[in-house]
Length: 205
Image 1 (cartoon, rainbow, N blue to C red):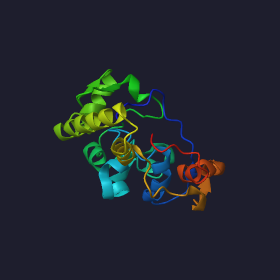
Image 2: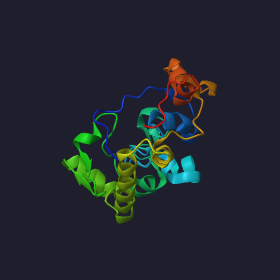
Image 3: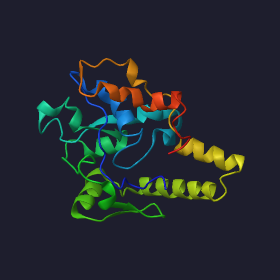
């Protein structure tokens, strides 16, 4: 299901540092969090031509609460613009790199979302993961994906799955980036762009 939260915590593969403008981390975060919002799981592909323009660099601990973490990679997440706006200076909220979100959040087949723990319920409230337009969007997408997966061999089903669940066409080639410092320079060799170039990336995820 496209809105199934990860069953394990996110382990960061990249470690760029030294940028003085936090927006410079966006290509790394796109790859790090698989081109989707960590909070609502909206994917870049689901926004059509808007793509990455509908996403932002999110600060786990808000800049207003601790300005020293503004350009700290471990404090940065990838979120859609709506979730980013709703969270604002609230938080910090549950860190997906410290906790498996599946233990705290569950999306039902009708698009509704349930908090399984106090932390999950807090996250739903802060980021408004139960907002009606998002619930309705999830409901439609879940139904479309389920119908396509029921008969995946037809051309139309394949088109639907690739349209909604494929990787974006403008994935960044992290090998070309030169951050001021990089704690894991070899990780760029396995960025999604490089995997696709080697034929090692699945058509959908």
